[in-house]
Image (cartoon, rainbow, N blue to C red; front, top):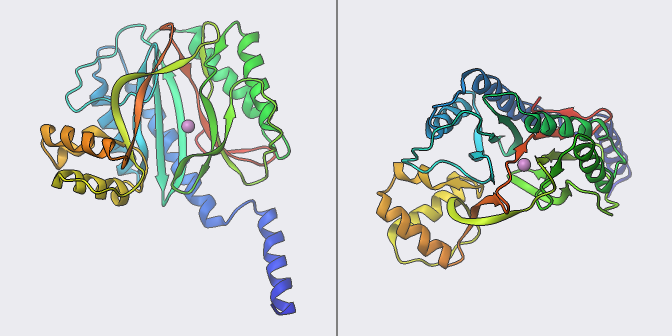
Length: 314
Ligand code: CO
């Protein structure tokens, strides 16, 4: 290594520390985040009781595409005690009812750089929904370089408690990486002893789930979301094609079962997914339900750590 090369590299490195991240990468994060927030504004102005959640999901996914984004995961529309990982099935007849607590979680990527954002809709003013927003806001207010994951968890738990609510203990926020929608370390929503400190330029998503008192989620038997893990030999031709789609077209990011009906018949989709799951080629995301059927509300933003943080999905 030559001397000049060494110093040049040092100069570039210190410049990067000032400008937080590669400007092109920053623009892509911002674009992905902006699409999330535009979708939220449009959906909040149109959503109402009686609407089919399948129509809503298709509208959201069409908007993301129109605006030049790709899906980091299928839109999750989880109602009441269904806490996460529900995306409508291809012939889903579910409609939003008056007073339902409807969590909408959207993941958009631009060239692999992800915006992950969630909000909760209810047809009536609901303190639970407001609490989720307040808890998220208070957590964001302490984000800066040097803050620990433990401190963030404590802030989230204490804010929820001060508002008279609990949180879902076994769901967390997380880091984001390129094409990596749930990078580690995870960021618990409760007090914890992690001394991991946030660094300038880290990309994180904070996503507290609030409920009446502290709650827990468990897997249900419903699965609508899958993700590529590894190539495995499978007999069915459709299974091989789905694995190819999962790996390349969906970039190993989560995908919805309903997206596959564009290519294959419902019977073939079910057979192929079963084969792929049994072979260990795909990971599944079962729908998550609160164990005591408590209603949950969620709020989530993606941010780039700085002082103050750059919240991309605002
Ligand atoms: Co997230």
